[in-house]
Image (cartoon, rainbow, N blue to C red):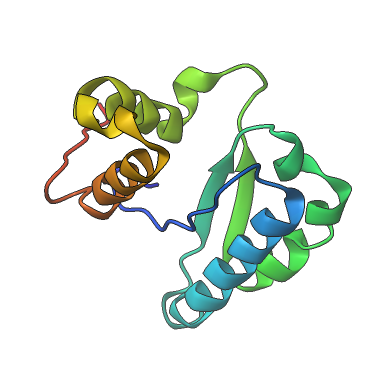
Length: 128
């Protein structure tokens, strides 16, 4: 997610693992590569220090993604206030989710996906 509220989502159900993160980065970097070669503007992705972001298996792919124009930057440990996605989740949880979505898993999933799809149009977030 950018400071402008732009984001690319790769929804997953259940626990997220290293393989899912690598797959998402492979898709994202493959899509970004052509733009990078046209404009030579790298995309910097900020990550927290979750185990699936710091695993040895993920580290093996960093050079490949860098060649596609995507650079990984890690936040300092224990700094959720610097993590834009944490700010987004707080807005979703405490401001945008309707109480009715808590009645079932399906309602919750659909409400969250609706919010993520509407980010920037129906739902606005400003980072100051």
